Length: 427
Image (cartoon, rainbow, N blue to C red; front, top):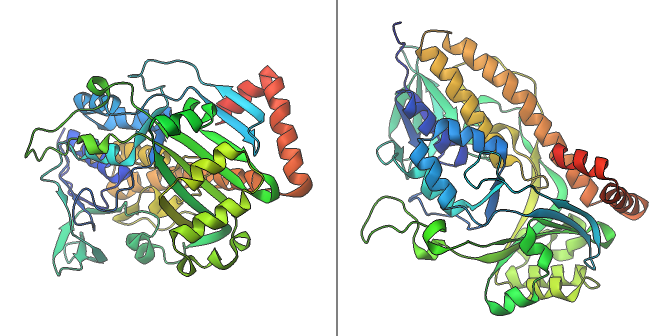
């Protein structure tokens, strides 16, 4: 069967874009990735994310087996369970996660964003171009598409994919009617490095896995620890002077991460992000946590790495007229962090788009037909995840009677095995 030539351009070297690049490379499809950051380590926060079975299957499908195993080796200690507590650390709902083979796609795989990007850059040195800020796309005379960059350069291909995150410039031009909006929730995140004192004073639930605390007046705190089982298994070091994007010892950081959130107006003058510095945000958070368990307050008090942000979400839109420009991940279906699904849905997009483009190259379907099918499916499951994330956000920030009802529901689920099993499967 005669193959159809296809050159793909990806804007954004994030999780979804790099996963897709590997998938296309494995299919022999020419691909280039253009990233606005200057180097692979620019603005890379060390916070963890959790790769779900959905994300694992996408990575397994797109990455070479050796690279998938490297991802396994560079992952943090596996999650044992999920804990829902009140502000005094009293249990509301405790979920145990089944023990699985660390190499299995069914494993919940915690990994830092730094480690994940290092792994995904492996084998793509010649395909990823940094310091390339996308400006606009335009139709090329031959029916292809041209991407233009801030430095005055341009690139032309058969397909342009916007994988450039929540503030996507590709989306802004392709779908100007698809904005992100504020949810009314404000969050402050931080992390504190692990040492003997931190290990002793941190509540044990946080070392077990994701810990969600429902405080009074709609305040909410998420906490989790990033730990590694052992140097030999958990990290691979790069030789001195190597350009292989391997992790260094500095990247193998162990810490407790946390995120506090509440309705924006509760932050007072700090509701204006530019009005306060990091110490002021920490002070406001501690005031809002006045009657919380001292151990949780101690973690916040001893945090120096503080990041405030406004929680935003995309607005679901119907399918648009398909052309040779499409989107992936947060560039379309950006969601709140209250279900931890964003990266995994982006990985699902990457695997689905790899399959769609492979069928085009094999002359099994036309490009626009394959893209239209991908977009319809991606819109359906992507915005379903957006809605689920918003529902979770509203639940953990409920107040008054609604708050007490939420706690009651969690306690009921905790005592009814069938409900607990269903709740876990829905996650």
